[in-house]
Amino acid sequence: MKRLSLALTVVVLAAACAPLAAPATNTPLPPAPTETPADADLTPAQRAARQALMASLNLSADQVRLISAEAVDWPDGCLGVRRLDALCAQGIVPGYRLVMEAEGQRYEYHTNQDGSVIAPDAPTPASDAAVQAAREALQAALGLEASEITLVERTLMEWSDACLGLGQPNMICAQALTPGWLIVLEAQGRAYTYHANADGSAVYSATLALRWHREGGLAGFCDDLLVEWSGVAQPRACKLRIAYPEGALTDAELQQLQAWGMLFGSVTLTQTDEAAADAMTLTLSLSGFGLAQPTEAEQQAMLEWAQAVFTRLARP
Image (tube, rainbow, N blue to C red; front, top):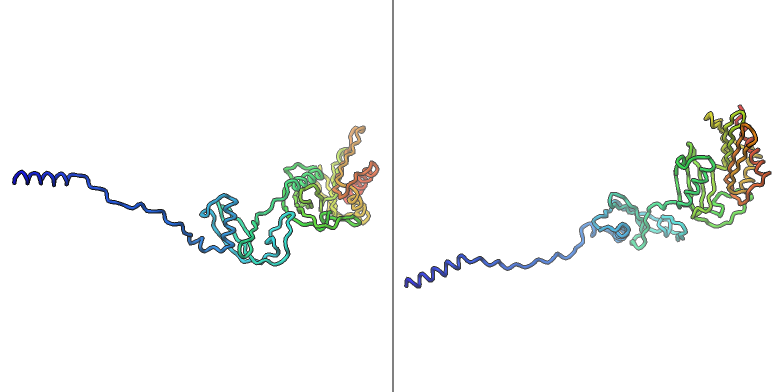
């Protein structure tokens, strides 16, 4: 009996000292994906616009947030977003203007009612070529550095004709809608408007027509004359920084300017009396709409015309 009791005691103690078996557990499965409340609340149009923004920026859904939604009746099939060379079906299209935010930036999208048509309303930048051509034209016309010219406005346009809406009397312009740009530049406190076609290969000044500059001579001249197509003319004494009162061309002067504008394209003239001890230099630039260039006689007539206008307007 003592031996049996001792054996049982040893077995019980051994069992008590054995490590406990780990309880069986089931590995939890990942929860089935479900829509977040924000997703569930989005309309089809909002979902489509958000998906478009996510795709364009390569972002996930949680990185894009809807800021506002506004019901809008768009004026055409392009949902009010103008694009070059885009044909837009005319007619009211009910839809939405949606504003979303991603990475600290806000983005506007236009949609139809069910989101099957989406148009980002990011401003389309003007053709670099068109803006650069307008800058260079104004820089040459005013004799300025590029840094002195500021871009104020660039607007996508659909010009009524091949003359980009700047046809002059008796000028022949093909009557065809021409996509292009309205470009407004600022220099020396004045605004200058240019009309351009889509790729900037044709850029016309809608404001500045002619600039005349005179410098040198025994009297030490330094004079400027700026003439606009409207007939407004501004004489200035550049060395003394004197701006004379703004004047206007006479009817005869304006008719002559318009005639040159129709006939000639971009014209740049320089005339220097190199033989004189105190040489006089005359420069003239014309922003015309034609294709021809002036003959020597016509160049001389243009220089004399500008000097006569300056003398008349600058007279005390």
